[in-house]
Length: 340
Ligand SMILES: C[S@@+](CC[C@H](N)C(=O)[O-])C[C@H]1O[C@@H](n2cnc3c(N)ncnc32)[C@H](O)[C@@H]1O
Image (cartoon, rainbow, N blue to C red; front, side):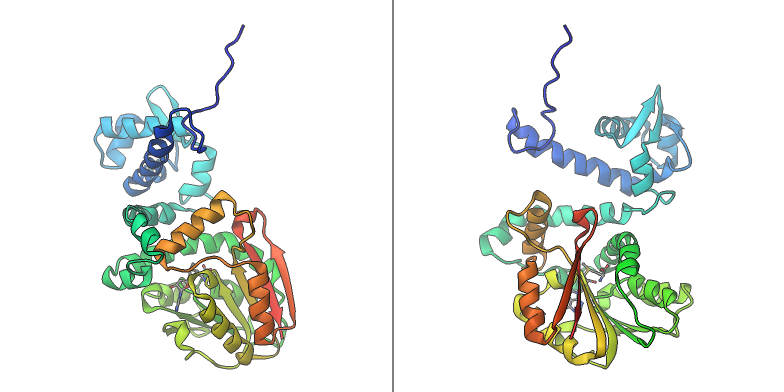
């Protein structure tokens, strides 16, 4: 009789048979993936399998160190092993190397920074607000801004095709305003697709360090300009046809979102379009959404908002028609398209 396979007690479930594994295993899993990103282990395997000593040499690691890390990544399903040779699994190749569809390595590198910050999560829980907002921390540590923008860039590569598929851009639109536009990839994508558009990207200076270079590389320096500012200062107001407010609402307090949306309504020319992307809160919160809210509590002291909350603010701002598009998979969030 074959033994009955027990559930994997190393999976974090909240009901682990050995409760410390619920604490220990997610920590080690994250540490291993982040170490692979920092040493370049996944990228070293992107062009094919490597024997342990060669792999170790490529990433500048001790052979035993490389083997110990790689063996855990095999157990996690990130690598496969044949004898002493390691290879990326299909999923690792696709999501964590430059040979894949989208390289989320910047996300793992950002996690290295977030990881140290999250050690202090309990202080935000006790206070109900961050000790110091992420934006202030970025001012003190200048390497964080570009790192965060590169992480957002990976998300933007994923979201970009959905935006182009779902956002109708009329022939008479000429001016696009990208609030919190950071890396600039969304403005670049729209300007490439629609030759009649010019874009202005508004974001904090810390988020715009690489953006002019990215726009220049895309050959769009003459059509994309930058406006480094706190968008809550509302000094970006100018007549425009399409406004992007993508993954920015959850970084603001409710009153600030209401002020910003009211200004957007005033800035839009007749027939103009506001595009919001966000992770809309729905009760009961699923684990991903609840985790994201906890991150926001720590980083910005803000939260995610529901569809109804957005609808209320949009109606108050004078938008009469709002349509919602849920993206697939749901973790990608939703789009709200609003017209006055
Ligand atoms: C989650 S990222 C989204 C970036 C980009 N819109 C995208 O979808 O990939 C949020 C962006 O909003 C910017 N942001 C948040 N609050 C801001 C504020 N008060 N003023 C200017 N930019 C802000 C951040 O700097 C960051 O670049």
